[in-house]
Image (cartoon, rainbow, N blue to C red; front, side, top):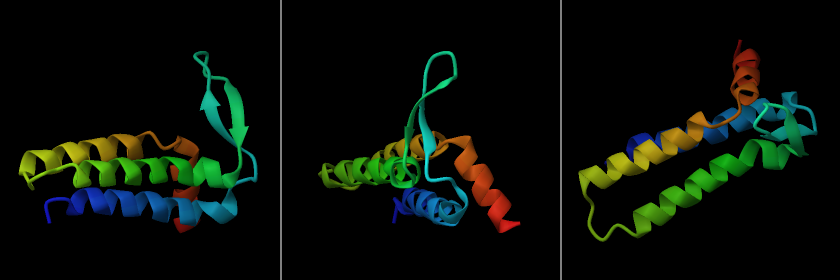
Amino acid sequence: MADLPAILVLAAMYVAAAIAWPNVPDRLPIHWGLSGEVNRYGGKLEGLLLLPSIATLVFLVLVLNSSRERAPMAVVRLVIVVFMARSTPRWCSSIAAKTLT
């Protein structure tokens, strides 16, 4: 179970999206320009579930392309998943935190 930490991070991304879902507006900022201004909005589905879905897909591709289970590859998969989880917009995590308190 070398991939358990990565699986837990992926699960946490979906849990955070589920917790935030009822509290976020229907229109969410999903892209920012170099100046930091929002230049694209999307719906809840795109705003909350796109990044966790891409992270899951990348993780599965990396797992399926591993010919043998090696600990270094599990670390690489974990680093990629954590990086993608860290890229989740701050407002998503702050809404989830407010909901839990």
